[in-house]
Length: 109
Image (cartoon, rainbow, N blue to C red; front, side, top):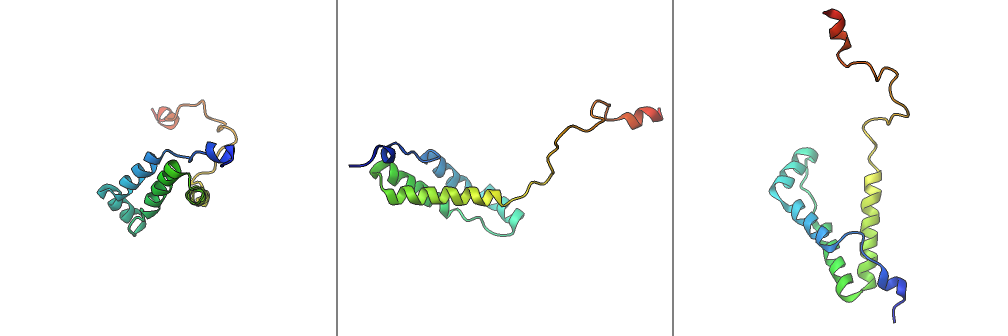
């Protein structure tokens, strides 16, 4: 008999979301964009593996599928944290935030 915590666990996304991400990744537009941006073909296999693991969990409650899905989501989140923000976030607005943007043009007139 499984523990209540084991049966109440749900994947972080719906299984259809993994399938949708896989289909998007395989699309011609995304393949072209990924090649243009990164110079390599997109690797979509993990989305398919995650979809299959999600289905295995929903249908059979396999703990191996659950553990694989958790590990995949954690690695995906860790990969996102590796990217540094492009801009430094402000702590307060600029001192002249209330002035018109085209103030220089108004003075010339």
